View 1: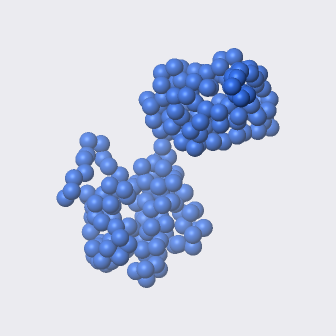
View 2: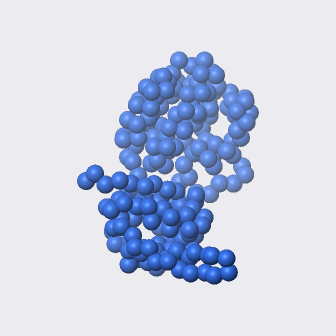
View 3: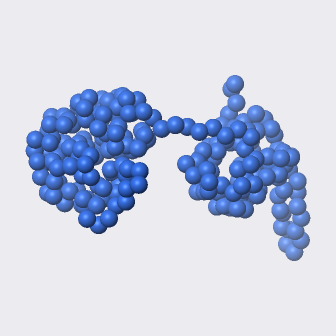
Length: 219
């Protein structure tokens, strides 16, 4: 449609005046995309109400001892919010979004393809089995898949492996919580972990996906 888009992260907007200033600069038909919209404070949420309902914002101007409010008419715009914590939005704010869509996580085969393409860009040869293992452990998120691949590549290079593969199990890699850790800690596990300043607990909590109903302890 040729409309422009302004993107912000909610956590970077602490003052509602920042948000009002951005709204006032939007052009006709533009989109305002707020990532992690659940991070907006109450004051910022409330600053959006008149903008969404009446197409205006109120700007408070202080002139020495006097304070006055100027009503600014906004251009027509579309607000888009993205969140992984829909329930964290207040009910009044959530109700002002007319259209609510849910994005499903990527499937393992899709993520495996993403991992394979990323491996080619990183010049890190990876077997299909290893790419699928990364996909399985990435919680359906490409970002986590790339992070896992990046870590696997670094460890594989230190271990002088030609490629990231399940073959690393032959070098003494053990399993963590029943899931293959081969692509994460090739070679002697304790040596590899200590070399990178990572404990077994880090891998269980940060790198490995938590199954439904599973809790992590200190063991």
